[in-house]
Amino acid sequence: MQTAQQENITWHDICAISEIPKDAGVAALVEGQQIALFSIAKTSQVFAIANYDPFSEANVLARGIIGSIGEALVVASPIYKQHFDLTTGQCLEDETVAVESYPVRIDNDRVYIGLTV
Image (tube, rainbow, N blue to C red; front, top):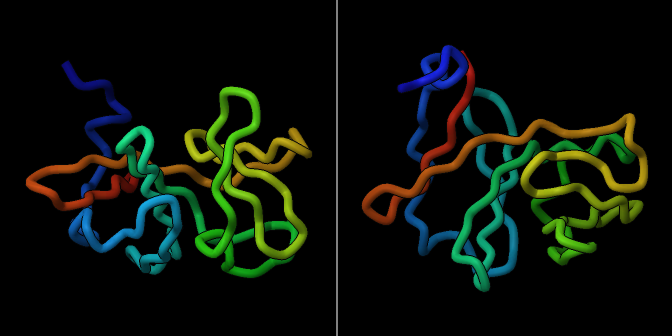
């Protein structure tokens, strides 16, 4: 059974899974929003967060360095190095700051991003 929030998601076909480099990020423009996509080789997962870094005020998170801090998979902003959780978008250095995170699904080797309508 779907929740009300799940019913309001529109799925967008972004690219083939093979087009996202392993352990790196790429940017996609979806409905006018820049989204950073990350493919993690170790877990075979793809994550999507906003590409906009609120600290540098630039669309650069897709160019960040992927790593982990504790149990969290993160991307470090290439500008001022703040870390953003790839699952939630939460900044680890400043609990008052987070970027949008998006649901991802893989279907027939295609990557789909869910945007709330």
